[in-house]
Length: 87
Image (cartoon, rainbow, N blue to C red; front, side, top):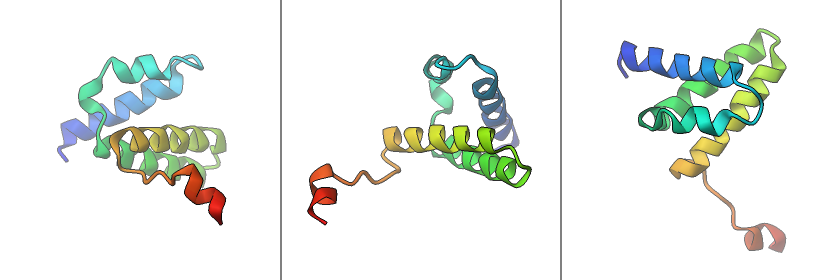
């Protein structure tokens, strides 16, 4: 990952953190070229850093968005509900 790409990820994460609640999809849709596994990984790194710094709200928000993006990108295994209910 290039330094420029990393900076773009950080800028997008900053936009997500500052946008009004509910505007996150629009922020992401405005930069579809940045939505990839690298963004998910960077979000997780920033969320972990936030958690260590005591910013639980920011950490939870980024973990949530990263998980949703990972699902959309097929990076996060979905457990079919019928499998989950059989246990």
